[in-house]
Image 1 (spheres, rainbow, N blue to C red):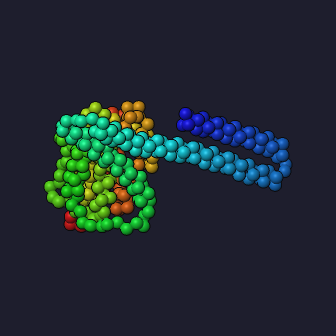
Image 2 (tube, rainbow, N blue to C red):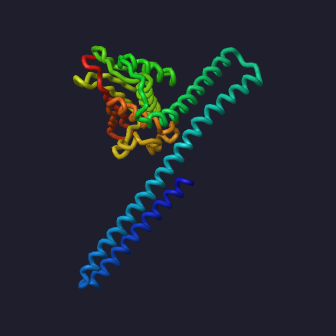
Image 3 (cartoon, one colour):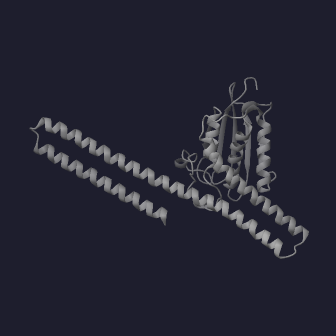
Amino acid sequence: MRVAGRKRAAVIVLILGITLVALAVALNVGWIILNLREVAMLVLGVVFFALIITGLVLNMIFLIREIRRNEQQDAFLNAVTHELKTPIASIKLYLETLRAREVSEEKRREFYDTMLSDTDRLLNTVEQVLLTSRTKDRNRLLNISEIDLGELIQECTAIIRSRYKLEDEIKFIEPAKKILISGDRSELQTVLTNILDNAVKYSANEIKVNVKLTDLNRNFTEILIKDSGVGILSAEQKRVFKRFYRIPNVSTQATKGTGLGLHIAQTIVKKHGGKIFVESKGENRGTTFIVRLPKITGG
């Protein structure tokens, strides 16, 4: 209801702004026609008119941006609340069941596994929020070290396989030789796990993710993460890295997330002197994320 209300407010602001601009134009044109002989006043009127129009346009832009920002923040708060509340409720239910009645050892282990999975989900949500705050600080020192990128990708794919209980659904094509980069291992792990996590979540019915590491040129290496999922419309591809942004796709409304993962990934990659891109041929045609990072010379 709040989102619908804000959309109506945006429409009202636009209509009001357009009406005022049209009225100002009409009045100014009429005034010019009636006062052609008064050149000095004409010049002042034109300047004054230009200032009024500029103020109205800037005011409309500001209001619309504020409405959009508020909508994004509301969506973020709703997503975070859901991501926190759901696993907590699940853990509470299993604990109450274990306390209230005797269950078999097999069921007990199943409950423990589910609670551990929910705990991981909680920790992941909290880490996403904390990382968003930390990555804003461009001057924050990174724990720089030499990283075997192929080894790091294997670790990240193993994390996602374990998180979603997958096996051969994620395939990694290793390069012919070892590729070394310099960076913060923990932060780069966050980048890759966030992208892989999205690839699995947005894979619709069939999970099929291919990861490829290539030696692009003398200075850069490239990681391609390709899924066969819901895809991204061209109009949305530039927006997916914005904070709180989630793709407005009907088939993914129930997809879990906070809208922070790709924003965090882009911030970290830029901090490492790299770039991140997204490519998709359209809805239901899969998505490819490309992460380009500077490598150690000779790596």
